Length: 499
Length: 141
Image (cartoon, rainbow over all chains, first blue to last red; front, side, top):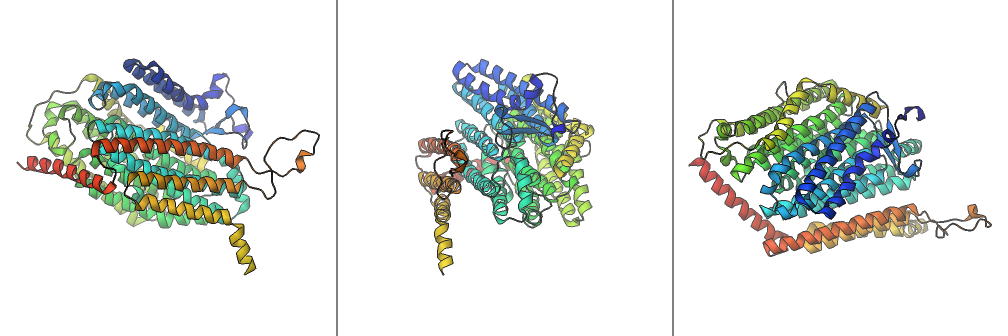
């Protein structure tokens, strides 16, 4: 193992894993102390930019298949907490950091429309704490640390969602429901950790994997795994446990919806992946049966049912929220195939869908700056008066459907390949059916945008609002053409995870 | 019979943990009052704290205090302190959740003038219908 630990030449390089997590955490209280709206935006922007820079360095560090480790306070694991960066979490760190940078650019010009100005400082502070939590969950290799970071991110997410109450009071009940469901999920997760600790006496992922393999078939560990699957199922909105998601996404401020849709559920799914492959034995019969008999049917139901529900939604934010549920179904399906290709498709889809959904929600946010609501009738004829935003929305929509040349195509293709490889023909057909439903609901919006009479004429949003939208839209195209960042890193990650 | 009894008695903390956990979860699911939901959530979380602390207990173990070096410290049996430490963190998280939940309830009461879930849902439905009807009418016209 020691040969895998990469020793950097610079002193600072060795501290990258912790800097990634701690940078936003240190800035968050600073904002509250300074209490200045513009300054807090600038500081959070610089902070997330630093995170992005660090995450790129980390991807470079792990791109040769090595693993970067960091011992907190110099305590050697399993006693101390270990941060462990490999290809699988480096790519997610990159996704979270870049989405947070783009979302912050967008918030500069749009936040005032959704949140009263005196709350901006606290909003950015909460946003950074949420970012800290998400990055921490991904970076750490200590299972209790995962819980702590998960709750840091969740608690700040509840606050962020509730900020939508300025425009619509339903944000409060959405946030409260999310709090109840999220806390039940987190507590289930803690029970799972307790069972694992009881059986193995360790909290470090690698250490547990080693000790659990010596124990063989152990009922306590299996019960712990079941608790963790349910807990994470609540956090990642696995279908019967998803009721918090549509309302939370609909009534949260657009900036928050963008950020959550692109990152939060993916991070929970990552935790599940990490537990299946790094903590438990993926070849174990119990794990395989659980995924085959339980998670795969649920994933397929999510793909179909959520897509059908999305077709009938008038509120576009809710429509996209249901489409998110369907996309989570794709990712869960890729994981539940329990094959290298399936897992790779799942990881690629996490990144691609992150960019796609962020682009869609963000262009909705730009429409909302003019129309003040996101009901489908208010978008009539906006294709003419807001051509750039509409075009970006169309690109995002195409990527969501999975049209060749866009990011969504790559991951859906990989998923189809993976299902056919394992021989699930019916599932492959259902994936295509679900994509066709996506065509229906995206076309419904495109039709309103371009082929209806303009009811009111609006002017295009400012350039500063367009820049982040177009960065995301271009990413949707770029990741559909150049797959070296996503597919290659995902393949490397699956090799490490399947080792 | 005797072995059954000792199984039940020997796992007493676990039975308490399961009872508390299920009653907490039941309260969260069945009660419509938001404050009662938070209470249920607290009971649910507390049951987990109890579970953690009970797994750290050693029979005849003392507090894990570093004894003076002259005594043969390796022979001392002590309870595992780690679950206690973990649960301290979890308690902090639980308190933060409760505080946030109560703050949200205050806000909800300000906006809806009630803390009963059913009433809130009815009002939400009314909001939804109002928006939707307006929306459908204008799309058709």
